[in-house]
Structure formats: C-alpha cells, structure tokens
Length: 339
Picture 1 (cartoon, rainbow, N blue to C red):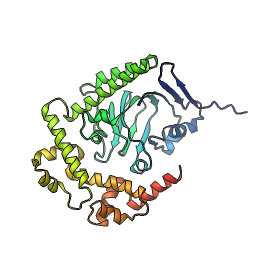
Picture 2: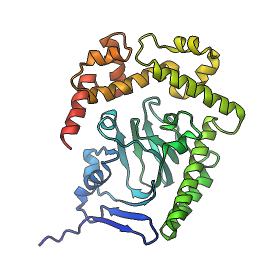
Picture 3: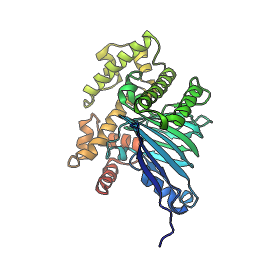
Picture 4: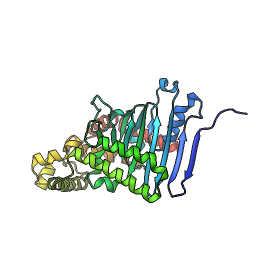
C-alpha cells in the first residue's frame, strides 16, 4: 500500500454563493512538486523549470474564489519563471486581463513584445497583463493576489485595453500602499462575505487597480485625457481597417486623419511608436493565421498582411517571436495535437 499523501485539491462552494478551490503541492514527493504545480497552472501559463529548480524542494499553494464572472486567487509559491508565448496564445482561448498584487515578494525580469526587460532595480509590486499578449517573467518567492478583470472595466480608462499589458507599479509609487492594504484585507475576509459583497469588493479593487495604472499612464482625470482617448480610438479603427494594405504607414495615417504629428506620436509612445504598433498588429494577426489556416503558405499570409517581401516578414517575425514563421506553425500544430 502506498504511503504517499495525495496532492491537496479541494473544491468547496461556500453556502453564500462563492465557489472556492484550494490546491497545494505539499502531498507530492519533493521531486514532483514543481511539475505538479506546472500541471495545475498550465491551462493559463507555462512554468519554465530548470534542472536545478527540479532538484530543489518546492512549495506552492493557491486558493481560488469565483463569484459571478469574477475570479480572485491568493497564491503562495517559491521562485518561478513563467511564460505565456505567442504559440501558446494562438492555440487557446484565454483572453482575460489580469492584475497581480504582491503582498510579499515581487516580479522582475519582465519581457513583453514592446518592452524587452524591466530594468528597474526593485521588483514590481503590481503587474498588469493582457493574456492575449506574450509575457515572460521571473516571480520571486511570494504571496500574490490575482484579479481576473473583464475587458470592459479596463476599457473605461484605457481606450486601447491592450496598452496595459506589462505595465508595473512599484512600492514607491502613489496608491500602491493603499491598494496592497485593501487587497490584503479583502483576502482575509472574502470567505466570510456573501456573493454580492464579494462581487462588490472585487470590482472595487479592480477599479482601483485600473485607476492607478491609468494615472501612471496619464489617461484619466481631465478633458485632455478624454480627447486623447477619442483620437487613439480613431487611429486604431483606421489602422485595423487598412492593416492588410502594404502602403499603411505612420505617414499614411497622418495624411488620412490630418492629426498633428507630435500628438499622434505621443499617443503611441507606450507601444514603441506608431510604426511599431502597426508592425506588431500585423505580426500578431500573422501568428494567428499561421495556426488557423494551415493550408495557406507563409508567403501568402505575409503578402496578405501588407509585408512587402517574404524576407522582411521572416526577419520581423523572428525578432518578435524568436523563431521563423514555419517553426512557429509547427510548434503550434504540435500543441494542438497533444491536447
């Protein structure tokens, strides 16, 4: 008879309408704990274990609370490297906006499409993610509370919700202390709340988080911000409508919409510039089409999205995703077949 203690994974709906799940790796043999954690969170993000990490004891647990369409988790874990790749995104349908609030520890070495690395010396206390975009990060040994937030709530402050991806707040920034105290209090009392109370408290915390990132980005608080939001939405609609045209460029956008050049460039500064924004939209659509339309050649997809040559497309794709388009398609295909 085996003496192994089973992994703790308990689902229990509270009487007052909140669904609760608790998971811990404590019952696994030490050499299996990191892999058990990877299996548990693998529906959302990939754990990237090193050989040395697999050889070390690993501790992690998570409590997940769900009420209506909101999800709130409270997690404790040792150091982890986490990645959500574009190949992964192209083969699943997870599209939430996520806010990580670190009550202990933090996150560092954050790599996104438009920001190669967080160069600040102190780990971030709060991290915002759009799970429709790639991310790689190192999470310290930590306690982190995570909010899964509807896109419409983010869009109230960010006219382009995707722009929040990879943004970070550090402990020295305004509102961070207030937010972490509020979140810690919520975590301590959520089990005793009614479903309506929990829904309101989670939404209140989510709105506070979005407002803090909006203030950091200068997107809320005055009439000029509203005007910037309207202009951004106008430019974004134009780019989406003309994305497949090879002559789409910052100059063509300027000429078509008659916007001041400095204003237009400031609007897309957080995306690395307007040219980078156009290129990255094309590459993301190309990644999606490489998976969805396996019968269409790479060159047809490239020309269909406005790239002027196969070599230009391949170089841009490799810079963005660290692999050639053909390799990306093959990797995504293997992922789909392994389901």
